[in-house]
Image 1 (cartoon, rainbow, N blue to C red):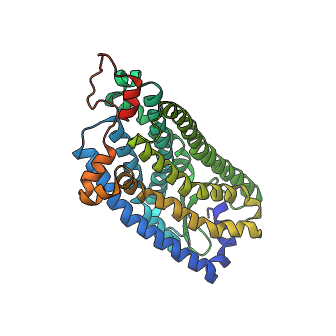
Image 2: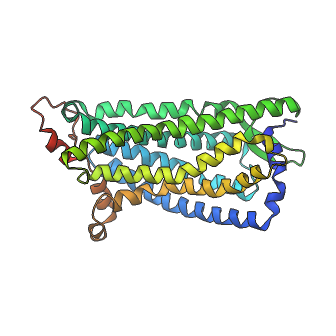
Image 3: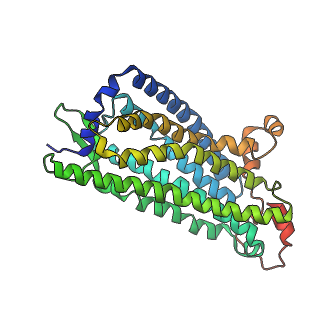
Length: 350
């Protein structure tokens, strides 16, 4: 019978599933995830409809359309994850969905943060190089470049294709987890599996979160300096939307990324360490907070993208269309060779 490090983790946490406090935390987490699923599917579906079918295709709408697609496809997997949590991490959906669901989850986890970094780079270039932007920033170029975040996300998800599968324990319980060997359980493979999971956790934290957020911070610093010199720090609607998206992403995802990192680094305490058990209890609440971010972006597009009173007056699709409207680049793909507007006008137009 195949054995795995995560089965040992599941056995070491059995007493947690029986405690009243743990059960209460799980219930609250599931309620949050249920709300996230309903709001997120409706909200991101609306963004996809407006940005994808009602609006002219521009660089800005293309970016936010991809971000909405990432959130929507991730949220579509949420019911499967919720059922697994209810069943104490067991997996009743079979081998194919085991791979597919977690591949989709990780692709969209990496894809979302890479897309946010991509959008920040785009806005930074618009502010720092308005003349180049006016002449070369086209939908055709953006369509080619926006594939890069998705390719990177796919590369960092390859381990799911290789190692993720279903495995049964002695009681017949089936889990969707990582398998590193077909050998019977041994201390040697416990150590090897632990090292692999640690490496995976570090990669997720550094490349899948810290580096993209660092790029965003650098871009924001450069944008703030440029706009402050021009006295336009509060004049860019699209910059306000992006700021809200980035802040909400960081606030929602950082606790989960930190707990998940510590959860994998401190695997040596998996059998008896109290710290590991605390992290296990915290994992689902912070995971629910991270998931909640996927339903926030549509709300931010509406309420940050324009005045709140106008949002109430206009229809929701019209509000979303206004919030996502391209501010600075021409809507067509035609490269503009005519004289570019002054830098001040370009920045003000954003």
